[in-house]
Length: 227
Ligand SMILES: Nc1ncnc2c1ncn2[C@@H]1O[C@H](COP(=O)(O)OP(=O)(O)OP(=O)(O)O)[C@@H](O)[C@H]1O
Picture 1 (cartoon, protein in one colour):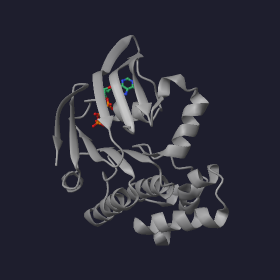
Picture 2 (cartoon, helix red, strand yellow):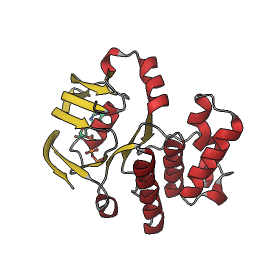
Picture 3 (cartoon, rainbow, N blue to C red):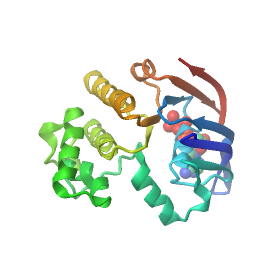
Picture 4 (cartoon, rainbow, N blue to C red):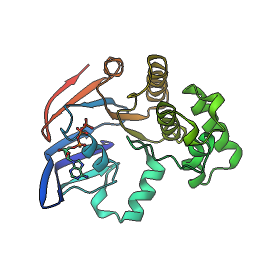
């Protein structure tokens, strides 16, 4: 069974009397275990598609299934629970909680899942260390640079060891050492634990490692490449 399937997905944003058609009929299947990238020019619909696949928003038309579950048939609360249990998200607004330290932020999803403190701290520390943040665990988001906050957001997603990670430009803003460390960590999770990854990216370092590239243009899939 595909882990994600989108069929006939259209998304129209309406606001200020203007309608923007961000997706114009997208069909996409992602199988379990894939390590895949969405590429395309700015405004082509990558973030919109990732949001819909995560159930953060619903399509104007069409349907998204994740693990066989049609997202439009779930309530908002059920979609939130589904994300908590299955999906790791890394979006451009990192959504770190300002009153929590890096460690607490990275452990937050595990806390919501009810893991015991020692277990969630161990996993959060491990994920932060893998991203080069071992000496920043006690800092609050405002005491971290943009790139460091981004790494905490990635650590939070990876610490939860979800079924699938959806990430919007996960390596943007990272210097080459941290970018490579993150790529290695994602690859290891993909190869050793079978975690599925779908990310949008322009980063040639990351594109070197992906096994599939899906190209979006103007709200449509215009090409695909498998390696
Ligand atoms: N909340 C919104 N309200 C109105 N229009 C939006 C909204 N979000 C995105 N759009 C529009 O939808 C289109 C697709 O945007 P999207 O953010 O999905 O593109 P993208 O490929 O992720 O771009 P980038 O690479 O710049 O992040 C753009 O024309 C954008 O202006």
